[in-house]
Length: 451
Image (cartoon, rainbow, N blue to C red; front, side):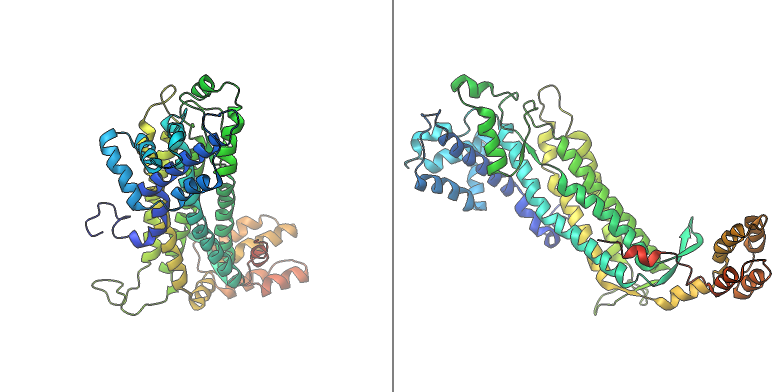
């Protein structure tokens, strides 16, 4: 790993190890083998294809076991064949024929890859890779959202001075601000899991030409639908050229990218809150914050996550803008690009784990939060002028603007101003009792609406 070109396979390899079974060359080959075998079994079960005879229970089990027992050693055998064929999918076909040579299955060997173009095998394999990859990535996303929800609930009553345009603004709570990010992420997560992963098995240009030339009486749409949907758990797309158009992939990558963008936004806000002293970070024995300044505990986890979110999104953006485009019925520009799906997932995974690590180290500094609020009495201008409007007092905004803009405001300034207003006693009393820390509206109640 020390000589790896990509940090995904080097420095960060341990953080993405779960993805190797989803997006490696081995994973691609295993899924190709799976698709070829499932297709062969489906052909054998079709009564209208007598030449591809019915399998015995033992024979079908033997074929399925070839998928279950497929190892990197078997994948290397395919790679050796590819060195001769210079065609990766044809190498899988030849490998499978070698595997059944000399067995009772040898008589149906020519039905391996029957009527298929390479893309029939590849598009389903890539969809299966994405399906597997999502089972790894989505739980990490869920862990972040759960972490944010838990913190939001824990800190829903903790007031914090908000900042709009970098200036002091109406107070909020720590919990409500975290809840906003949790809800934004959840909306995108719902979209991610709702996206249908599509597949095709309809031949060289997408309408079963070769299939019908041999067996015109077979319902090829239904046969392939069972393979794609029942066996592989994908969704059949009949409207294709030689390739499945990849639009669903673009939708998926764009949505994951949007999830990452929200996380990047969160990383930056937390980084800022740490720099403002609202949060501290738990120290870990032996860790060094700065090579020269011993006092520093840098927010490196959130910085690392931000950087890797950006890298992931750069990959996802190219995938989503390139993959739906193919000259005429197909060109091969998608092939090399598709091999980088795991790169986008990998950088996302690194980002997610960094954020989770950063969240685990956060500790709230309520003293700093309170001090900030105590020095921001100018934010009380908003509720005061709002109640003045209720009372019909002329030009309330302008009067508060004159009082507060560019002026040093404290509790006494605000109290004196309110005391001089002609307000109903209940309204005046409510304003006099209000402080920046108590002026949080329904922030805490909004947190309670989190699901």
